[in-house]
Image (cartoon, rainbow, N blue to C red; front, side, top):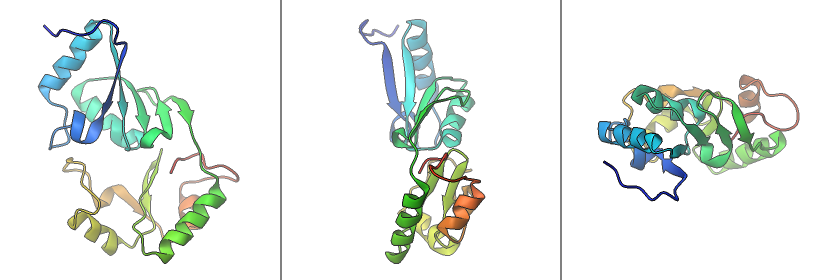
Length: 171
């Protein structure tokens, strides 16, 4: 039986390199531990740089449910996807940033509620994975094919179906 400090009400857990093993899965021991926490009346929340879709998948596979703090705090939502809080970025600022990053030949990985986008050419982006500049998640089903490739920042905004003003999808 697990011994816990009774003053702990919430356990916040990172995903990559913490909750997930090298295969991108939650181990049976960890699943049992988290279920034991729940039995003791403790809650847990996932805190990750991943978007909601990519963060929920390992939880679903493990049969676990909890709230998620995604995209490094830009989005907080319930397990079923209800947005609790979100922090948007002004669309014009995003356009300026992406335009500037293109002048520096930077690899751009745009994480949103609707998936990941990049304006980086496919060949350069694939090379970044091969050279471990962009690290794989451990999930053999995750890779370059998870990204939507678009040619310009303005095109990404159109693909993501964004309106005027603030972005409804987080960077």
